[in-house]
Length: 233
Ligand SMILES: C[S@@+](CC[C@H](N)C(=O)[O-])C[C@H]1O[C@@H](n2cnc3c(N)ncnc32)[C@H](O)[C@@H]1O
Image (cartoon, rainbow, N blue to C red; front, side, top):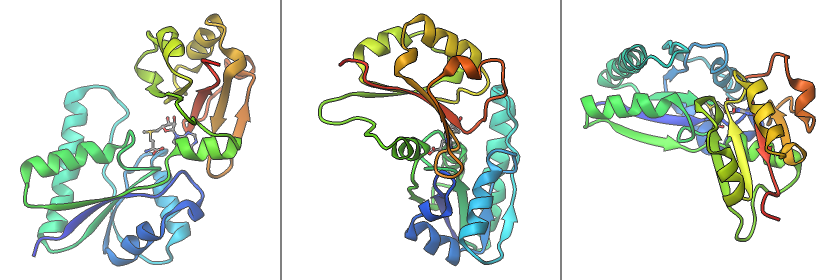
């Protein structure tokens, strides 16, 4: 019988934020698929701290590029390597930082696998997102009542930030590390600095700063985001 693929969210960093369901799945599968890139490698580190057992490891490489054909090849190769295990009757857990449905490579791999092998059973085990972890570490609600939340992958451009600030109460900018200086400058120019908080490594060794200007021209942690709050008050 063909094995089952699990997309398992392992949470933002603290092994205590791995769910009981994730742990049960990780204790039951023989094959663990954990992307082999410095940053995503953190998911494997969380698993190793939370679950004391050995796995057979699949370590697909996903190049840090926007070139669609390069990524497409990597996603397809990863989905075929997973399928080879499933075909042998093995269950596979693809682990992802935070949640698998929230900006995760798992989505691309799952879509390729489903397209090529529609018979394969896939189950997604949700995880605590970095967004929830950051809000929790700040000790404040992300949104409440009728407030609106916008989540923006800032690495793909921030053209509509001004418009978003007029229409949403909280804006969360993800993927800010590569163009941090330009993003911080934009926030400043729109007069939003006082409402912005930089948050890094939430859910483990968290760091916060309300002084975005002081972080410019410095190396910014990949595991970081900017929250802009209280916009329509
Ligand atoms: C590819 S996305 C992965 C999101 C993840 N699937 C989740 O559910 O949180 C990577 C981005 O998530 C954010 N991120 C992930 N972990 C984080 C953490 N522990 N603290 C702050 N931001 C984090 C950063 O903005 C980073 O650029």
